[in-house]
Image: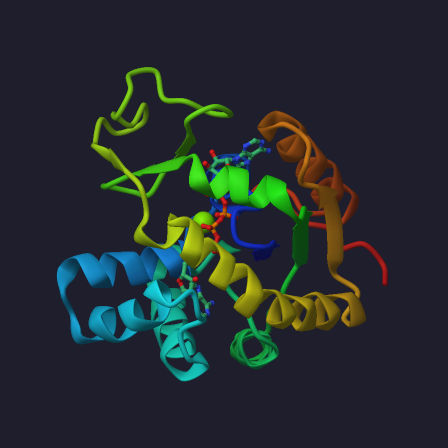
Length: 230
Ligand code: AP5
Ligand code: MG
């Protein structure tokens, strides 16, 4: 089965690319940020705990995040493969994912780093609007919806995330990038890291991801996959 991890700084384009890749590979997206936002919206205890960290631009503690992710991966729709957006975010989470996959005789097929940093990330997050129903991302300039304020895909209202305020954007960058480096190293050393240029337009990033995954022998669910040597 294909387990594809999308890595990148806050605002790199993980949530934009994940559904496109999901359509192409025929496997669902699991995004821990979306799971946390749903828990906040539903007012659960988990949501109230997570919200304190998210509003402060910090990572939610590993124990809470790993439990949430493993519960989601145990559902039947994740049994044929999954695209992970925003998980793992720490070395501890990366190890927990490896261990859970080993128990099923599987491993991460590819980790794709959408490589981008600096001011462009701030521009992307501060112009972002996402939909209430599924978190589909839009951008005021780079990827506007057909009708302002309405999601093209499901018709729901668009809103701006609480953590996309300029102060919180700065905190997220300051507090999360060093853990991202640890995760990049984890996948580099296990030989499954692929890097694409995140400054390309949305279509260009999607094409670059396709090229990397094809070179790694990753094919849509149902077709036999050939893992590249090494
Ligand atoms: P999460 O929701 O995962 O946020 P993030 O990682 O900070 O990433 P973003 O969603 O901000 O960016 P993205 O890469 O998805 O970019 P997007 O595609 O939207 O996490 C939120 C919080 O939850 C965390 O801060 C943390 O507190 C907690 N959390 C989540 N997972 C956790 C974990 N595993 N451990 C601990 N805590 C966790 O694109 C951004 C904008 O740019 C959009 O407007 C888009 O339209 C535009 N855009 C995208 N690509 C392009 C392009 N190529 N060209 C031009 N514009 C583009
Ligand atoms: Mg996202």
